[in-house]
Image (cartoon, rainbow, N blue to C red):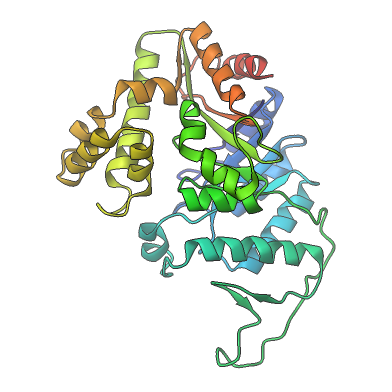
Length: 349
């Protein structure tokens, strides 16, 4: 397995600190750096900056929402950063959710599967260099007759990209989205991943999308992992609380009562009663109680915490289900964080 880490520049951005940080991570052997984009600093500009400050490490958008930019702009963005980084870029895409897409971008959260397919297909048409004609489920190029001015015509990209086969990653957890990911993408980025539940929860949609299961992933790469805390005591307790609070927030409050993708995933993991309890508590304003209701069993398996031997065993579990990039988070209060990264990398290789 390779090692990936998030650069964590969505809410604050100090260019000198970021430059030192990514240089240190690259020197420590991290294989891929990625970042998210919600409603803070934009990810595209940040990764272009990181590309200039690094030499070897891969870079991934994890994720760019498919509703925040037109499909052709996404394609242009990918070929620009890939060219600037000399072939180190992965275009990571995802739907985000209605709260962000409609509340921040002012765009209807409609036809997520169709739009994901259209965006991927249009990107690959742009990179191929042909005139882009696409009659999709959510996006058509040029605009069909009766829409717009009627003056649109098929165009093709200008310039020569570094690669015409830029890898595409999709962040997905729902069965139909995962099926689509297996069919069309090169990389899969799930969230709240439990390796023990791999085949039970995702095996069928992965197989339907591309005959890929834990023992036969084909060319599909997986990015998944957890927060690292080696040893015992307050550091481990703090990390476990962070995992508990984060998943409690997603399961309890990321979406409406009847439309929460993360709550649905928690139920598919087997935590049916817990998922309902967490959501009930969260939506009635009892956040601390909601977070406390996240079971220890989940926290044990969703984090890389405890004595080194246990963490080493957990790393092996991720390897056993075919994870390609062990995605790790190192808490800022960690002593000698680069040494911890090097240790995890040694276990993963």
